[in-house]
Length: 448
Ligand code: NDP
Ligand code: 2IT
Image 1 (cartoon, rainbow, N blue to C red):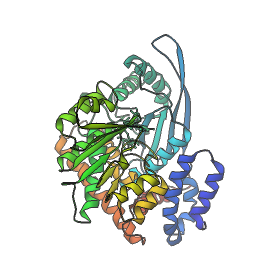
Image 2: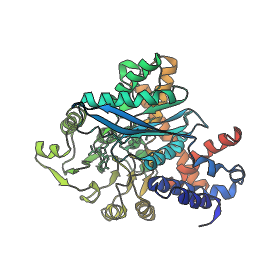
Image 3: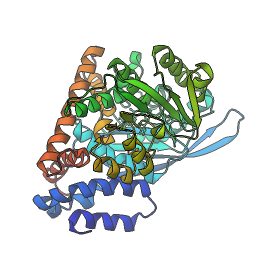
Image 4: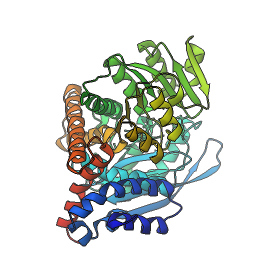
């Protein structure tokens, strides 16, 4: 290891040795930037890397709430305001028992570059809690959200910091959070995105991350004169991103053969059709059930307990849409062996560094999350624009803008990879293209 970027990484890893996901995300970005640092000494002169790896502000707070038995529960709440050089902090909230500072710093750090790639004026942030919505009643989720917002409200605002959903935070949670914000501040502003359609939300925001990932994969496939038509597609997860990735893949003629959750994977060799997709939407979004129930309902669908989708038969295209580090080196080798040509990440950092190495070495088209899943936050940006105008675009208008943004992100990452000597490497391309805009804004704005 040598060079400015790697020195910054070495120091960071000594400073925060316990934040392993954050270090993993930072290492990937800093490795990509080494070549840019050599060509453009201004970044070192202004200590941009030392600055960009430290959040501007980190807020950690107590979240007490009463469960249905009248017992006091206490969770931890976080908001990482990572970088606001190009716009208000923007990024989701994650409610999951594994949430800690290192995980949210990884997500907030990725968000800086992702948001920059969208070309919309949004800085990077992330937040959440170790609260687990699974198995909680609607009333308990509401109590938690109200308590969480009772502290968070003083730190956010439509021009300051605009949270949204992520794992465990969907339309229901955004509703409870927004209601409490509105009550405390006595104002109706676009302080959260992912809102309901009749109270300030944008059409196509629920679909946006999954659709956007599919649009990004489509662009990668086009570079090899291929498409989704007739392809066998494995999707992990069965939440918001997975659901709409599947819908778009089906529209484009692909055959979706898997979904998963933390219990295991359902495999459908015949391919998911509209009836099965509708069943899953109700199962996951209304009944809040487990993916295994698809196998109970439909003959021909197998449930593989404790398994991930990647080793289950022939897969042309893999769309990991669940969580970080859910596709490891052995999974990548299994995909390559079974003829996989494309991996496009709906989740944030779902592939381990070793898996990415295998995919790149085998010339698999590989779309890193910060580029391929940027459609969600991009459409959040479109929701913010509509809120500012007090006007709504039609779903065709929003979808066309989303599609165009994904095409442009693909082009930026593709061109930056070429320009800096690693053609076809979207990791380097996305990191460099996302970084430059933020870093130049930081230089313009002085030492703050
Ligand atoms: P949801 O909460 O809607 O769904 C999450 C899915 O992933 C569920 O199927 C869940 O299964 C599964 N999952 C979560 N944690 C684990 C785990 N530790 N092991 C196995 N499976 C797990 O979240 P989203 O669909 O919104 O988010 C999915 C991914 O996409 C995340 O990485 C998120 O950061 C990323 N993302 C989301 C965006 C958005 O707009 N929502 C935008 C960009 C990225 P189970 O029910 O068993 O927990
Ligand atoms: O990881 C992400 O980009 C998101 N969870 C969406 C963030 C947003 O502000 O819409």
